[in-house]
Length: 471
Length: 106
Image (cartoon, rainbow over all chains, first blue to last red; front, side, top):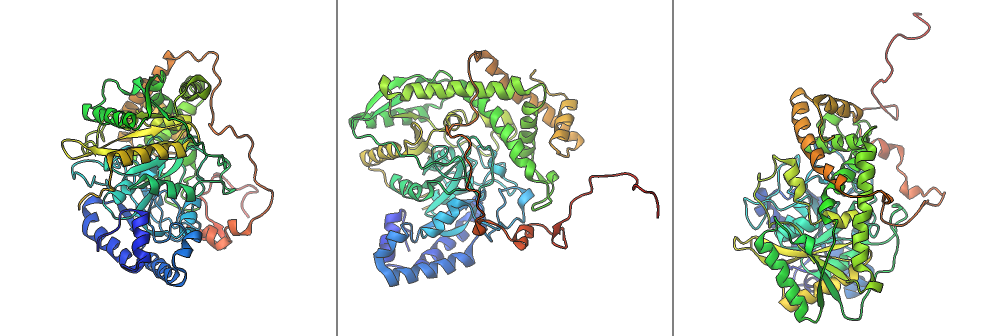
């Protein structure tokens, strides 16, 4: 069986009875069993429940036909959840030994909503432990391998989710993006990844990393699939006080994209730079205005992020005391320990003003930069185009011994988190070595529809087809 | 600023309730000093008239309805399901008080 690559293709095949949902689940698990030993993208498989649900899906298709899509728009969509998402009855480890045996008693809002919409959970994916990392190498269960090159990292922290979609182990996957953890692995693995506006999607039931910057996103192989998933996951659930049902911005007049000069500086790989600039040419050809802009505080975003984020990490990870669930605190890995200590240090008496408060003030400056370039009363742009990472996927082990070097890999993604704005990672071809290239589109808060529109324009203009590694 | 001595690391680890081994203290002292040294670059930015940003939603004092939603509550069995160290429906916790019992021997 050729596994379908989009939601549309999957549902079409199921309704035409070209195969049953049970057969499709069979095909996914067969592919996982054959190829994932080498990639390590899954930590736990959900076989028993997946087959139960698949039988149910087959029954619904027979009984109701296409009518059922009104109630269950994602019927038949297989999903792999990052192991930060609580799944009732299914082990959830955050890729840490602290939660090695943790079986949640409830599910995250996003998990529950995707279930309700007809998705089938295939398993839980590997990631950097507690989502701390940009390569997947900080997992306590071994690194995930990039499906496009076995000596390369798939990016992180949502390493297994990006890999699972790229390798067609699942149709879609979920991830969290606190400093780039959806957009960067999407970029390294050649798939689409969405980091929604902070406050658009509920964080309820997802292991918290840094609460003022955590956002809950996902991976797929087309913009249209990314949008379909977002339409299910977004919106208030009464359980996360930061979530608001805000009206999503739309734009019918001519669109304008900004190219921030601060993102094209020393350290940016030539092939990556070329890919982003080529995308701007494509947009221009499609009648979109492309202008140069400046975000002068970009270079400080990393420092702001690596103060605020560990501070919030140290607070969030203080709950793991080994009493109510989980192992004791000596089970934390090195990176979690570093961030807990760094965060505790910047919050401690005598250092709070110099580090934490200072970072929160520079955060304001970064937000003001974005507000200025997006300001509609001042001829502002609708979106920003930028590289996702200074390089394509880097080698396993290349940065893992130098924590600061690894942190600097986040240089192009953290600003969107600091400012709470959405970002869409778009694949755009390959390097000479055959590793995926791409770019990101960022927009003002709640501008997801505009990012999708631009993504669609790019897909059509380049005749992009959903792609799979290891075919 | 910009340097964490071994003593600083020990102090911070104690505040964070994080048990560290001797070789870790040395390693983290070096690594954390390097990171803290890097983020010191923020001193270049003039923030004298700038308000700090705590969050980006613009929302204030969001409260839920003061109503118990029974489907959102864990029952006792579920609440205890994550721990093997339970006794008579309670979590067993490490003792935090030490020393002689008051009132002397009986």
